Length: 227
Image (cartoon, rainbow, N blue to C red):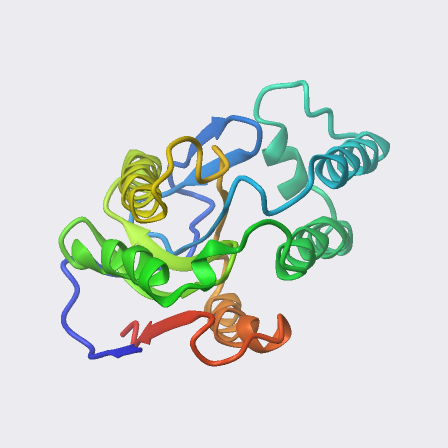
């Protein structure tokens, strides 16, 4: 899928360290900044087995503690941003890449492999584009979703993600004739730091199906010009 470029109702930008940021602490930390592009990942509740997740969280905690970052303290995520660039890169490479590699292994039922269910996700993401948010890219994978979007206010990101996930879960469960949890509660999100990182993440989203060795019809990719 591709979209045509239109005039956005607010300018897209990358992270500005001198402007306000909303930091929300849940199982995973969340940062939001008005108008700033954000890379967001949701995963289905069964996409990473619990023993693998516990090991990942323990190893991440040990790495951070060894580098002076205590996750029990408020705003610990900001401490990561104060580490030397080489250590920041090591942290994101070690734990971010490992997280996404696990998703691409295809754990769980992978119901979003079905085109009619992937379409529910895509239609929901596109429904309020350029009204409530600006969406540039997404890919619906069998057990997770990656997207790049910007929101008008700091709070809007969390509120819109909750709205998206609730609506999608209800519609997908209805199609599957079941009830209960569909998504994991927390999302993984990252404020885009540079134009180069934005372009890298666009390439990452586009190539994710190939990396996961998916065939045509087992994923749904969308992109449009961000200018």
